[in-house]
Amino acid sequence: MKKLTLLATGAAMLFATVGPVAAAQAADGPAAARGAAAAAEDGRLHAWADPYQRGAHCSWEGNKRDWDYGDDGVTGNCQPMRNLASSLENRGFAGGYDDVDLYYNQDQSGVYACLGHGDAWQDLSGGDYIFNNGLPWWSGKNESVNDNISSHSWTDGC
Amino acid sequence: MAGHTGSCPGRGKAVAALLLWLAAPALSACTAAPPPPSPRTPVPEPTVAARALTPAERQTLAKAEALLTRDCMEKRGFSFHVVEDLPDGVNRLFPHVVDDEGWAAEHGYGSDIQRKRDTLAAKNPNQLYFRSLSAERRDAAVDALNGPEPTGLEAQVPGMGTVRHSDQGCESEAQRSLYSDLRKWYGAWKVTDALERSVAPAVARDERFTAAVSRWSTCMRTKGHSYSSPMEARQWFVRLAGATGSGESRATEIASARAEAQCAGTSGLAKTARTLTRAERAKTESDHSTEFINRKTLESGALNRARDIVKAG
Image (cartoon, rainbow over all chains, first blue to last red; front, side, top):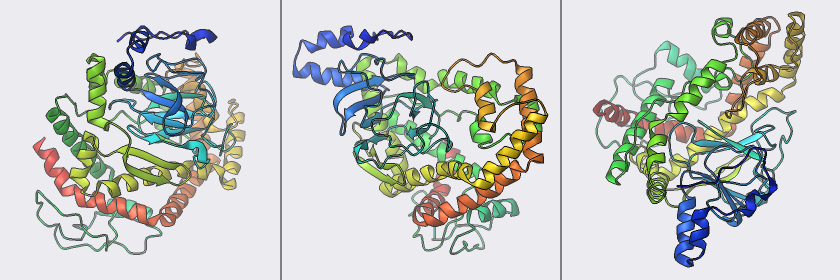
């Protein structure tokens, strides 16, 4: 499946582009919407701006150093997601690095929280999810995970 | 299997079990001989606290679960490979400080191990298989393995809110097959794993630990290495998430790690870390005894069947 290739020196226009697959499907209505959703669920980390998988929706197959710089373009609904996500799902396939560390800062730095393979956080907005990995003096310690994730990397074992 | 935990553990295992059961209300009773394994073993009632599993036993359970997952995926029309875990990296081997001079001399901070982990992860047969599938087949494969949507199972994780998972996927099928009570297993697994992860940060917050880190840092400076903490040192040499390293040479990495290990001894940091970790772990298990007991009971109950499954391959 063709994916967008994202430039590391990110142009801010990244999210304006829609991948060719999503663009073709957008023309077709409900079947296409289901197709787009299905295409999105292929071994990726998913993040939504709102709880319960609503609102802007980004998904990534690999790591991402800054959630403001777009995603794989599969959902067709991604917005700059840094410090915005309120629900997440790890839809990775098994093997190797299939759990995900979510970081407070860009570049996989600061405190982090781990989302296991197949797991979902449906509503971070209650404030009871805390970044619980990392040392006391790292940035973001004991901050709420809600609206505070800036980057992620795949790992092997929460 | 009857509601007892089987034969008495050997001395080494007993010590390991004892360390993990410092606050346990009751120790498991040793029975005279283990009952014969049976294909459908009922889950024992947690009337007697099950002993902690050894790493080897945990591996048996993991392998059995992977084999059951494979069988389920094949029934659903997909391939699935049973693969060894990745080797442990420095953060798992030495959560607070590298305190093994021999290991430091060979691995430094483990940048070599990290490269090996990255390579093995990239070549993982399940990931390669997955990427070879079409988009539609990938979607179906994830649905088959993880389940179609994250409902059915949930766990209230202390400090982390509610985590949810499907109960329809093959991984859940495998766990249901091994542990019988899938809901109970999922809750116990997620909660105990999260609590175990909370031990190291709790130790790092302790003022006895931070005082020892200061002494360690002073020792390192006298050896010509300027780091305020072991964490700062290793991040210089071992970059996770595929980020490029600092460009420092292997020789520098090893020299620094060897100094770290020496100072870990003389400053008392290694001993302090071990003592505080034991105490913190015991306190955590005692504060959340239900979930830890549930996990141990379910695991113990699954062990004989797991051995049979692994033997049958």
